Structures are given as structure tokens and as C-alpha cells.
Amino acid sequence: MRTNIQPSRSKINVQIPLETRENLAKVAAHEGKSVSALVRESIEDKISQINKRIFEEKMKAAYQGLAEENLQISEDFKYSDGENIS
Image: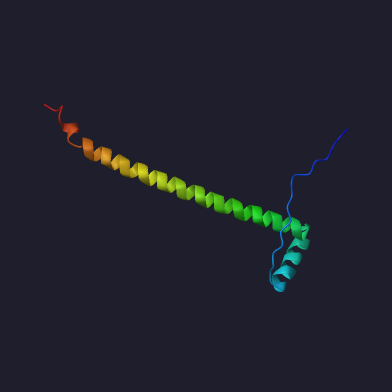
């Protein structure tokens, strides 16, 4: 017995200008997709872009924090490098 389980779905209503709706329908038809599929893909792409930007911002902050820490460590040990020279 084969079951076809659909993932959970939710409906939302959004209001967009009529011109945007018309352009959306044209693009969807050109891509051979339904308007709903195109909107879903667009939302998923936008969320992915935002999540990537957030990740990059966090990584940048982490690297900057490490850079500051490394500079402080270098400053702390700058005189110890010459201590063993006779």
C-alpha cells in the first residue's frame, strides 16, 4: 500500500498591486509554473538570501572578535620574543 503524504501547508493572503499580479502571472506562465509555485520559490529564495546574510554577518563578527583577541595576545607577548636572546 502506497501512501502519498503531503507536507504541511499553510495558506496566506497578501495584497499586491494589480500590475505586479499581472507580471507575476506572465512570468509564471513563461516558466511553466503556477503562480503559487513561483511565489513559494520566490519566498524560499528570499529567506535563503536573508539567512545567508545573517550567517555572514555572524561570521564577520566572530572573525573580528578573534582578530581583536589575537592582537591583544600579540601585544601581551611582544617583549617575550626577545627574552631568550643572549
